[in-house]
Length: 468
Ligand code: BYC
Ligand code: FE
Ligand code: FE
Image (cartoon, rainbow, N blue to C red; front, side):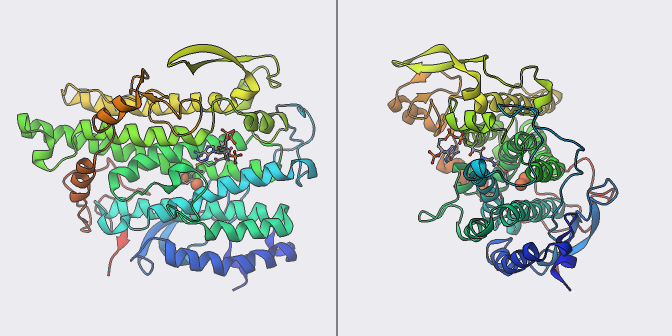
């Protein structure tokens, strides 16, 4: 089969020989990377997967059994918007670009490489999880997320090859050479080097870290580089499922935790083999804070430049009135002399924070849903998002210590209380001890409730993954 037939696409790959050759050259490296760094032990397994075969509503969700290395990683751009114009910044109103303008080449390359780097990183982080899946339903969802992150890598590699010539080819190779967590050649962004070696972390990651993905993609969907805007718009349709996996996964753990708490009484959920709510809270504190870091510094000249040049907008730029953002300010709480002070930051320099605000609101909605489940079980406990200042490594709060409520404290006090707030070694090993595979169709591990329905209208007893 020809490569352009093997790769479903709506970018006329067959009509661009040069691009086709470049991708043909990259594909074997990708497949080798997938075989070595993709889901371990399941490469020959039939998985009931959704494959995007076109962008219209009928075509993008085609379900069938597929062996993952045979998944058809396609390249899709959302439909073009006729006469699309740059919607913000200094170039507002100018026609969008189909090719990369020379003066923005470096910035755009950096954005695309950073985005592209996260996709294979997440696959690497999750590669051993399949072995301890709580059900076949969850196993299938893990693999669906993994192959789609692989497709997102293809989406960025397509742009690198199409728009950046030789530099782009080198960057595309480098995307397969960095490794999550490797001290010598780590992935670019912090959260993508943290291990994901239990399923609680997986759901936290798909809730909080994939949601950063959503907001970064939403901001890039506004880009003046039209192929970037169109490819990210299509990626967002897949991203919705990743966040569904995270949000409902945690909801199911919360539900089970409540059931087991009631059963166990004073002995607590752990006595019945559940994950207790205080432990869940610590995992939330960890994954939420490392995901907040992914938005970059609160005050960022990079972000101002991206906005000024029309490269990266705000989430749903259209809903804002002032698309120039030259006059406005953003009121920000900044550390000063051991305390906190409010100050006004020029709006363009605060674009990372504006995006982070939208992200925080979206997360809060999810936490509210989980709390509803807790209330329904008559249990007196409330999950919450810690302050945006808590446990940060990037930005103005990074070198300081704060409580989950956002109060400044000394480093010593933070270290003293660390295990009250973040998963301790013993929490992690307890959670890990629960990670025993359940591979019988329809059955669930004891620590997680069943989902309310199956995938693609199939029953929960469906054999989502065919294990020989
Ligand atoms: N870790 O001005 P600043 C996804 C660096 S997730 C390490 O504050 P800027 C997915 C920064 O590079 C979405 N380094 O930041 C989810 C800069 O370095 P230099 C991924 C960091 O540039 C789940 C310096 O610190 N997409 O898709 O405004 C599964 C100061 O920079 C971090 C994108 O990120 C960090 N967390 O913003 C699969 C979109 N943060 O210049 C996939 C593209 C900052 O001093 N990226 N630094 O060497 C961007 O828009 C921006 O690069 C960032 C950073 C928002 C990430
Ligand atoms: Fe992705
Ligand atoms: Fe994702």
